[in-house]
Amino acid sequence: MYKEKDLIEGIQRCDKEVMRYTYREYYPMILDLIQKNGGTAEDAADIFQEGMVVLYEKVNQGAVEWQSTLKTFLYAVCRNKWLMELRKKKNRKTNILEDNVHLADDTSIQKDIISQEKNELMRKHFKKLGDDCQKILKLFFEATSMKDIGNIMGFSEGYAKKKKFNCQQKLISAVTNDPIFKELNNYDKRG
Image (cartoon, rainbow, N blue to C red):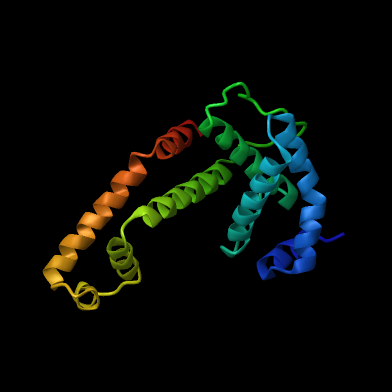
């Protein structure tokens, strides 16, 4: 049995024993939650994995002040992720998840999840861009100057700027027109 502080430090280090312990101790409650609310064991495994990613990112932000136990935080993340998944699938038969845990309304957890979902959506649409657009935007995000981007791509600086702008607009349009993005924004406003 680990103390809370040891678990957090172990997760920060990606300690295999701590990760196995976390999975062994916390996965069954997530499996139970998902299966009671219309999901499969595969859904539970996916949601738990996504929850662990959010947890890992949270503990690595540094100076995190926990308002709940690690177990409660992970449960809340997975619960909210599953509710969002149900909404995305338009499976409205489950409005309130059936569970035996009372959670405080933690809007920071919801914001973390929504932010992660939007980032995943952006990556999905980024991969659909053409090779030139992907390369230009990667260079731009790495703070490469427009002059250098032009040289690398074989463009003039002016054309590189125009191409970068068009690629950004294409990406923004693809993301913001995605029904999932609209659902995330609606969920964010409700939360």
